[in-house]
Image (cartoon, rainbow, N blue to C red; front, side):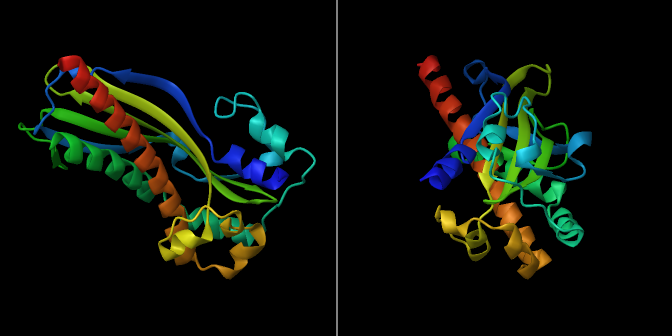
Length: 233
């Protein structure tokens, strides 16, 4: 029961930073939007941390992760496994997964026209910033912690249309590699399993976990679009 409670806590999605919703002030329907992706300096190299040693921070303001991990011990990884994880976790690929989630929501609900080259027809700019990406190991499994920010601005005026920052701390599950999304605790990857997984398998698993951030960012955007449409009526 305690283990299940631990997984439930670690699967919580936490919201930090600014969230601005000015969507009701702009007409985004069918507009051309330029999408850009930025990896912040703090996210260019994936870090591996250990939750029982992790101090309270803005990503865990109440020290929840640290408190839960107390007394459990820490699953330290070998240097070889750490290197394999770092190679498999590509920041550029992770940020692409997040950006795609936002793009998909904008196309689906506002019929926007995505552009990947800035030109005179680009009316809005959608910027996705990967601020942090960590792989966290504890005796119960390997987890990915991703913090990202998305901004939508009007190109002609520079006005902020929408902004949101999200941090997702979620377990990396082996079944991601097989295209399923079961939440079974037994599917959470253990440190001892990593040696048996190839680098391509790990990359698939990590990228699938990163897609969760994109989906959750898209869900927030969808809700804000719905609220904006209500305000316009």
